[in-house]
Image (cartoon, rainbow, N blue to C red; front, side, top):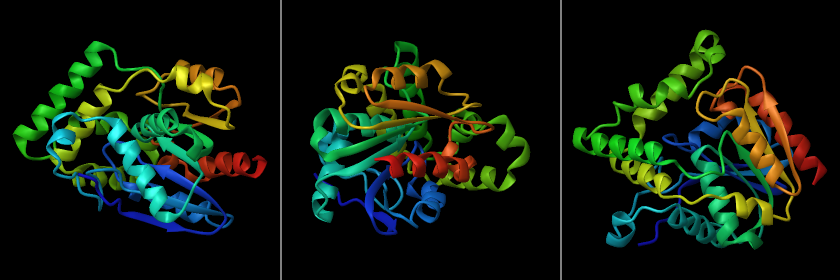
Amino acid sequence: MTVALHHTESGEGIPVVLLHAFPLSSAMWAGQRTGLAERHRVITPDQRGFGGTPLGGDPASLAKPSLATVADDLVRFLDGLGLDQVVLGGLSMGGYVAMTLLRRHPERVRALVLANTKASADPEPAAANRERIAAAVLAAGSSELLLDEVFPKLLSPTSTSSRPDVIEFVRDLVLQAPPAAVAWAQRAMAARPDSFDTLRAATVPALVIAGEEDQLMAADDAEAMADALPKGRLVRIPGAGHLSAVEDPAAFNAAVGTFLDEI
């Protein structure tokens, strides 16, 4: 069963599609819809199951979660908007989806932005932990346990100590995540393949963004992606953690804006 993606957009110009992190929604891109929309058309869809987009009831897709399903959702979404090619950006899980779309539909990507993400597949312990969280959320019928399991590592120590508005905003988004979507996404991420061959084959300009205080993605992950991309570059944001676009939207927007100006 296909789903119609809910989205929010602002601005005009080069279309820039930004894919949100787990377990948030497109609401996390508020600072980009404001800061980048002066010169670009910023499009922020809710991925399957999150925000205003339903998870869908197709038995096959529900039984076998896959980021390929999410990437194909996005292609149909772009078709609906009449967009043949876009600048595609993703943060964390959104980055996984962006790399999946690049692998399956490379002709749709004009340029690539990968933030706070990695190209390697989950090692077995990480995949097992995702399954544990998926099962626990479904059993509880609530996403509240993510406040202990996921939320503490989303933000940098700098944000935790000095950005109370960011803490509250992210916490609220985590609690809004539907349990079924959380479980499906965790299992889809656990099943994702390694994407380094996809990055090595990419011919488009690419920007990799890393938070210097990211507690989930190591510095080596960002460097490895930038090195694998033939036209890749790496920008680090001081004081930012795993949600760099939310924690320091000005720095994030400056990096992306400069990149867009050059392409």
